[in-house]
Image (cartoon, rainbow, N blue to C red):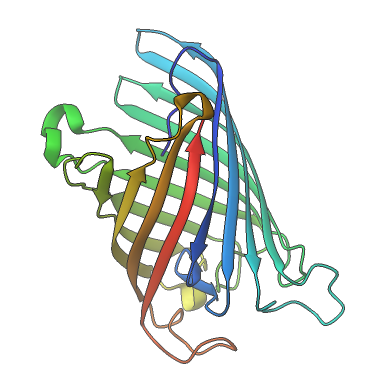
Length: 260
């Protein structure tokens, strides 16, 4: 997670990622054609200090998913490739130096008409354990998501989603940084079909290469690439219109981004 820093109270990051499959909370939304996911995040720092509360920041995020295959779009859709558009306002609080609590309210709009618009509330807690473990830090975070309207998963009612992540990394090698994220996702209250508790497990490797030849006045640019393997629960593994029955999925990703 990018944490705004520096003297300016206004900062942000933007970029675009390309993925071989779009998987969210273990749900395979698309696995065909070209999938491009541009994003923009803006951060406004309201407070910074040396006490127990170290920083308070307002966040406004925009994300989209553009699909060449038009999966799920009705024949009369005006924007068949425009699968998803997210609006994500929220705020974050850094406290006790190494903890970050981030709350986000999300609208996940489907301009193509492939799905009804869900509204969700997300709460995420990150812990920076580098002060304790140094190069062996795991950078854990946990996330809670509540579906407020409509569904982002395959369950029968608005439910709860829980996520636990570890992100160990190798020591930086010049401009190259490699991380190995491990993620486990769980649901309750019919978030997943048949009220499955376990959703998925994933593990992968991601490389980020800092493009240091670009002058700093144009921001901090990075080239990203990686792969993630998923193991899905029996309901997520069930056959759909875009895939046969399969518990295992592999997602390749690449992209470019800039922090400013």
